[in-house]
Image (cartoon, rainbow, N blue to C red):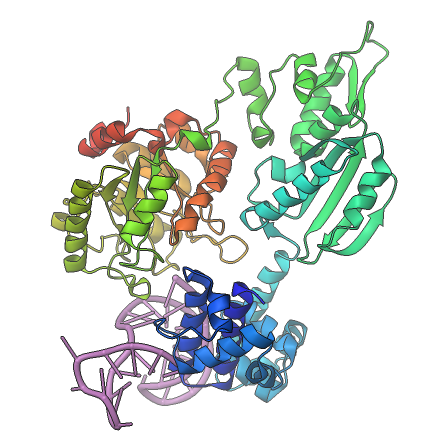
Amino acid sequence: MNREKLAQSLDDIALLLELKGENPFKTRAYKTGAEIIRNYDGDILSLAQAEELDGIKGIGKALQEKLTTLAQTGELPYLKELKGEFPPSLFELFTLSGLGPKKIKALYDELKVSSIAQLETACHNGSVAELKGFGSKSAEKILKAIEYKKSFLGLFRTGDVMALAQTLLERLRSHPSCLMAEIAGSYRRNKEILHDLDFLVATRAPSEMTDFLSRFEEVDQVLSCGETKASVILENGLQIDLRAVSVKEYPFALQYFSGSKEHNVELRHRALKQGLSLNEYGFSAQEAHSGALPIVETEADIYRALRLPWIPPELRENRGEYEAAEEGTLPHLIQLDHLRGCFHNHTTASDGQHSLEEMYEEAESLGMEYLGISDHSHSSFQANGLNAERLQSQIEEIQHFNHSHDGCHLFAGSEVDILKNGSLDYNDELLSQLDYCVASVHQAFSLSEKEMTARIIKAMENPHVTMIGHLTGRLLLKREPYALNIPKIIDCAAETHTVIELNCNPRRLDMDWRWWKTAKDKGVQCSINPDAHHRDHFQFLALGVRVARKGWLEKKDILNSLNLNEIKDFLSLPKEKRFH
DNA sequence: CTTTCTCTAAAGTGCACTGTGGCCAGTGC
């Protein structure tokens, strides 16, 4: 039993109560309880075991009893009983967007549908469309949602598996027979979505390494385990491939398995032009080639042999990196330690988990010079957005705070909603009192591309809008971006000197890395923002920097690489004077 | 189910969007 299992049990109860059509406030009490457990400062498990949960706001008598039972016995009869009322496969239906408890219950009660497979059949044979409350469009929409989900099968968000990837890498490196190890593949190229992790090790005892991997406790299934190669599937569904090679082959294998395929095709083509053949094991001479083969000890030696500088893995997509390498214009990519602060952070004033003071302390302990506070505006009702009055008093609070604290400087900002017609959620008078402002779309996602583009352009034209937050609203593997003409937006950002955010939330990573080089070439600045709702979320910045690097961004392109004085100067200028 | 300056009773995030079924219900933010 641990904190997460306690919280998960409450979430499970909430879901089951929803299915049963229980009082929505009761359901919400369990959901809220789960969040309180997750974010509680202190050893919540011990408190539950010792029956000392009294006084925690939101955990009343009923939740206390259930948490104590869970903590003491590891089980909860109440939850077991609830679960027994429905088939387990029914819960996968909740992962389809557009289906909630009411519809799932109707499908189950009327059609005996209890799995995605059954639902798909029921949509095809027309029985869903005949159901009361459903129609032909509903059936179509459900089929679309099933299709969408299927297309993500076996894919993972990089941010969700980074910690695991590093743990596994360290474990491989700790093996006495492991001389070198690296994660190659799309992980090394900083892709935002992965379908597997490709580990590469240099060793004199390859079969020891493949055997070692196949015995990892996280392994659910061993697909293959041979002399030099192993593939396993972990219990979370992620596939791990391991290649074990000699020290001599290692640089070639690292280059080869890092990809991308397109990048490697071009590299081999260039080798052939020099009379060399290149594969994952080494160089070999073509007939025309006379003289010794190049000496290769590192990956950089391979590029050097082909008269190129080493190309950083995140740029290897054959999207202009060879031309830049030849011209000597490869970027000096941004690094995490270049960041001096960040904008777009929430507090308990809206939907953040920590107070202003707590966020300040965390930023301070991370060595940030400044921290922008940007809580939601009042139209984001679901996020407890601030009305004009509350924002006004928050601005004053931040001013006082800065007077009484010497450390990290706080900037008073807002994540202000861009309303449907492109106007902002606060009037210009109030916005002008802020140090900065992030403007984001949180409602009416389904406008046409033309309307949505015009809406955001209108916001960028506002002199008080410093930057646009999570530009496309996408949620990786979950929700598509809304329709938007991004080249037009980038042009407008350049013209109006509006910064574009790179939102580092692992689920967003928005704007997409594929657009940043275009933006950079037009002189648009990027702000790498954690969108922190919890003090731990400052860790997202590391992921954001990976994506920024993939987008060719350098220190000079990143707004929050400026130091405090430079940022103050930047923000004090009228927008038209901000980019040069 | 929890909270509460109406505390053995009542109130508890609001709105836009979609599709269906007749001016509403469910979903998602």
